[in-house]
Image (cartoon, rainbow, N blue to C red; front, side, top):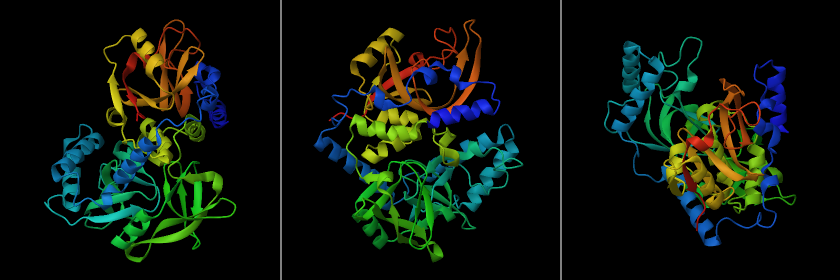
Length: 433
């Protein structure tokens, strides 16, 4: 229904491209549960021991910023990243680029070899940026160019290691478990050892719905979505969850406040990784809008998959190439032809357990619809072609189920477009015991 509503909005808005002309969205059911084998859909994709290992690995990586002895990204890596983002912002303007770099180096204390790090936690959804947004010239006039600075969105309650603060105290160079960049200090709170022990010592629940407003007994509310974890305090008689919420108190200190989350919005973490459970969470993600690097709280291809697997404690890195190489056993298929790739996919891919990687993009194999392999992915648009071979970029901008040739035209058999099967570089087998 969410996809139908989104497509209707595009048509009513006068968009020149009508998404209902995209064969995949018109013909492939936008409900992955339809594609499941009814006999095997409730069988776990991992053994109990294998899932326990994944859970322990996830916990270790998730809480690592609170236990590392110093920054994992040294000064040279930070300066290299700064120069890259300054080049994106300045384009060919060498003086603007140099001014940006000088300002961040001076204000961010990057000219100092050592700065005492601090542990922190996000208290709301936050953004990691390549350059502090307060830097003169970081944004173009009118605030445009924001997307060029985006590194990643970060969910509430993400552990952080802060290696630097700007001199005005407004921006922190923060290391999250999966990325690093500059974050507004107002989006985090400082944790001490007692807070860390209490937070880590609790069981957790994982959200399985988007757009959940969690309000504490003190009236503070945090908006959270799939991909967020909350410490579990107790379970109510109606199945609702009493949880801890991290809040920013006086002096920026992190405190815990109590809140309730309805039973249907969350599950005890981790959820068993069965195809049915994965499909249930995937339904919530379908139709959600695309956003580069998670800008504005939206998701791109890799964050969609990372969030999908979080309730199951299956760790995925943040970026598509890293997910492909480090998410599990990787099989390079770049040297294969279309027929060989398709045959391998049919023979070895497991629904909800196989990533398909194209340069700059990643998708999850979820099954077959007739003769078509179907993938779940969040993508900005497709190259469309008509029967005469005329190509044009068509905006889509949402998470959907498509075939591997979703850009091949406004109708079946069109001759032009970019084919995901042609672009397929590798397959990653996520859940092998």
